[in-house]
Length: 337
Image 1: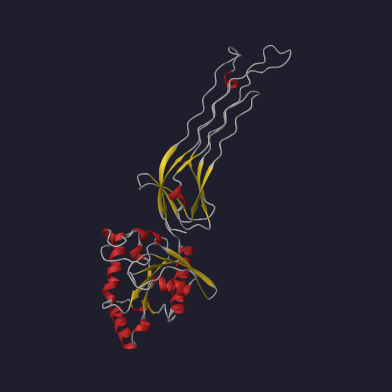
Image 2: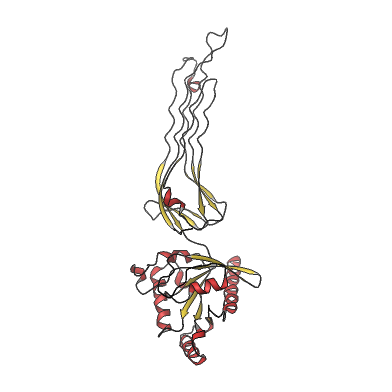
């Protein structure tokens, strides 16, 4: 299934049905009086958060959603049938945003959550409503009220426990495929990953949802590479897992590059808990690895470093346990607060 994380769509609720002008017709009753029914309400357009979806690709192929109008009223005081609602199934983590792309209408983060985006128009009154002591045979009925319409943006922000960040080709996708059943594309060239991937890793009987996003490069906040568009997918993560290629000439500079882009993006990413995975250590001798670690230790980042290799499996369980501890610690702290 193709990935799509934002799409603009048009929604319109149904118009209300018209009221009816009708009169009671019965044998031996000369003046039966009015019995016109009301029109039915138009259908609503409802956004509903559902499980089992992780893309908005369906909205690429259908972008207009118009609910049906209410049925007109009928004689014998029969009201018209309400129009059928349209329910938009949305992935967990979808934000519904106004056309201005600034005003958030709803943020659906739990399955089953729903919101009525546009309400159907009310049905018009039948002539029964206009009966009075001075007008016992009214021939007036109301037209149904028009529905509402608007353009909205759907924006998906994946919900994971830990977000994988790093430069292109740092080994994030290899790590994800090694610890979960996810099968991201893996190749020896930059930007192999062009859209986010989710994977579920298991450690000590607990599951951890990992979100892998395309790599960042210097200047990503200005649109370089694939830009910072996909950073929104790790805004909801509890922990950031920073994967660094230890075989690069200057791993510390690469670390600073990614941290700079997080700072430029904002949204609290810079202050999130960070665990550093010094990856591809299987390709280096222990002396070189220790030299790299000393550089990070000198910057007071040594306690958060784990030596890993996505190919050999080195350090992966220790890394997942570290992630689990940080997640559980953060959740417990939130409960106390």
